[in-house]
Length: 73
Image 1 (tube, rainbow, N blue to C red):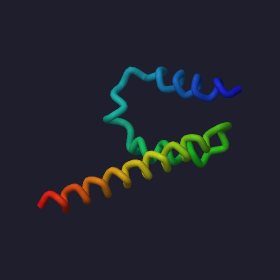
Image 2: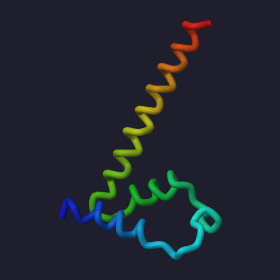
Image 3: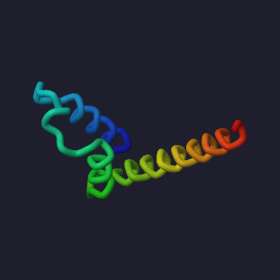
Image 4: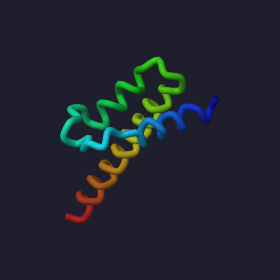
């Protein structure tokens, strides 16, 4: 069961219409991930957890960059 969700996501991602998704898609990747994270799909909360972890990591990197810039000036 734990393998079902990742396989489903990969399979759905691989299936395309052959058209450019960039031209027809009005949602950003973050918006799609947010919708998925709030859905009732099994293990969808993992997407939300991954987004929070990525946001936390990005915030730490930005703080470290800010400190590095302040100390080199």
